[in-house]
Length: 76
Image (tube, rainbow, N blue to C red):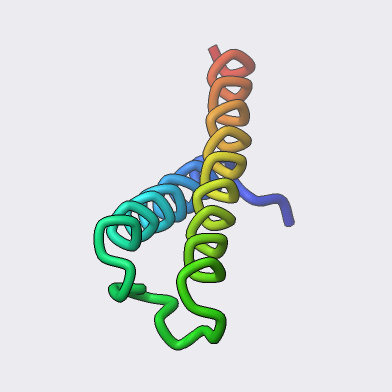
């Protein structure tokens, strides 16, 4: 079963928002790790995790966006 591009677009946008918002919040207050506060390693690990979430969101949203455009072009 193939994933629908709109699902990928929405999931990517959610990951992008969570990652970027978490990273910005962590930069403003080094002690506020948010969702990933239970991970060991402190600030560098937390910031890296938020960076990975943001990058995954960008890639997934980009894939979904291209898929939606292709579907619109194909369907007319």
